Image (cartoon, rainbow, N blue to C red; front, top):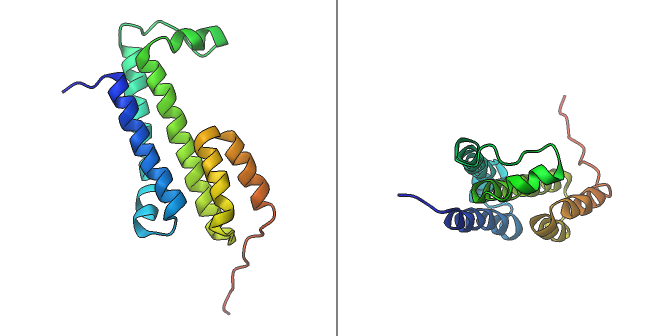
Length: 149
């Protein structure tokens, strides 16, 4: 069975969306901890990225493009497999950042409703959500640990 880049684009988007829904709606659920907060889902996307970028570099367009200039990146993304890899790269890293935001917020005692806007921005605009969460977390100190002697 073969999949087209378009079909795999939809599949990767659905996988990432599932992770984001769990982070936003059910951040403390056991399944969310197991699937997203453990980074299992971002790692599934990382495997997809590895396969897609490997398909580009081992395929007929292997010599097209690169990372040395904006023009090389544009040439690289003319190949649908490399473009798909680039998109999955974003999905993977943004979801990993969202998972970190939730874990960090839970550890700091930040109310989840305050984290949701940062999560939504991280989902849609990556670094903008990270910036918002970074500002938010500065207002919440890590809860002191209690030591028993």
